[in-house]
Every structure is written in structure tokens, then in C-alpha cells.
Length: 320
Image (cartoon, rainbow, N blue to C red; front, top):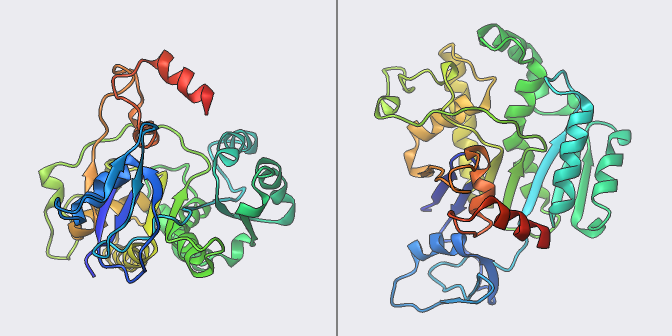
């Protein structure tokens, strides 16, 4: 099955498949940016797109595309209190900023008393929220704690902990579990970090794409930062394919003595080894050059003009 993948650099994986077996969807409203991707699979002679004045699009999906656009996207996130640069109070504030804004969400947490912030901030959408309480020791990657403790010896950033490695590399597992249970009958799933902090990134260069005799890129991504992913997701079938490549690459890197604690290293390596899965979209200037590239993926899906002033955008957000 051919799968198209878009990586929102710095943010989102969006996977679209032109050969999904699902039936036709009724007309749906989806962001214009998503529809521009769908047009890659639809012959120009098929007039299935009709723009509306409210900057959304009425779409009837053709049999050639076969993607259900009438289903909600399930957002997956998690919070575990582990050794971190930020205190628990900071993460609680980030939760307060994030959780009330998401329509459909599936969350993972440590213990029953940790559910309280989720319950409070999701009170507007009780029927669109699925909470899973699980001990940290029961996470799939936590069962390999000895390996993650060894990984810390390879990390030049001493403040990283084995617990942090576990959560970083558990994200794809979280997505796969949400897909398996699929409480909201979704086709698309999106992992989103509860807390996102700024890091200065470097662009991919041509030299980053060279493959060595060990089957890995010659570039060691643990020594620089070329990738960031507060968002990760897409169509369930594409995520399944990505999961296979992700953990295969993790094991290959481990056998070659490379740092796998930071999932960004693995994702960058997957992008080099499997370019057919990933297309990089680099952030453009917005807010008249004042916008932070870290948040470009958020802004991209707001469907607003890149030349908009900060003041205009603030007025717009105040109406949401």
C-alpha cells in the first residue's frame, strides 16, 4: 500500500493513503491545508473540492481516495511525574493551556490521583475523553529499564534520565494502543506533548543523507538537533507502518552503539533511511518575522495569512 507522509517541521506527521479500503465518506469539513495534500491523489478533472467563505472546505471523497474525513481525530497524550528540568507546577500550567482546547482526547497517566487535572480540564468534553491509568513500571519501554540506564552513559546531556528516555520512546506505543482500542472510531490519531519547550534547530543538509556500511546514516544525530516532534500522528495504517520502521531503526542503532534514548535521533534516522515515509516542510516566516519557528506547525493549521500582524492574530484567537 502506497502511503504519503508529511512531516510538519517542527511538528506533525500527517499520513494520507490513496488506497484505504474504507467506503465513501459524506461531505465533511476539514482544514484547507489538509485538502491541499489530498489533491495529490485526485485527478484534476475530478471537481470534488468546493471552498467556502469560512475558510473550510466541503469535500466529497472519491473512491480513488477512500479516506473517511467525517471521523474525529483522536489526540493522544500522557503525563507522568518523573525527574525533569521543570517542576510539576509548570506542567500543570501547560496542561491547563492544552487540555481544554482539544475536542477528542485519549490520555495516559500514572495513578488515580493524577487524573484530577485531566478531569478538571476536560469537564467540557466528558464524553469525548478516554483516560487510561497505568503505572510507569507497566509501560512497554519501562520493562527495559536496564537498557535505558546504559543509554544514559552515551548521552552528553547529563540532565536526561532513563525515565525520560522511556517516555520519549513510549509515544509510538501510546499511539498504537489508542489505535487498537479506538474509543471514538477514528481513522486519524495524533500524539501531542503536554509540555513543549523551545529548542534551536538545524536544517537537514545533503551530508546528513549519506548511509554507512552499518546501514545507518553517517551523521550522528545525537550531537546536534535537526528534528523536533511535539506532534506525531496520521492515518492508523500509516502509523502502523511507521511503528515497524521506528522500532527496527531503534534496534539497529542500539546494536551499533548509538544513543537511542532521545526519540528525535531515531526519527531523524528513520527520515534518512526511509525517505518515502517522510516529507519535510520547513517553517516559513510569520507574524512579520516575529513568529517563533517552534510553533509554526500550530500556526500552519490555523489557516491564517503568514503576513498577519501579531495584533490581528491576537484578536482572531480571542474569538475562538
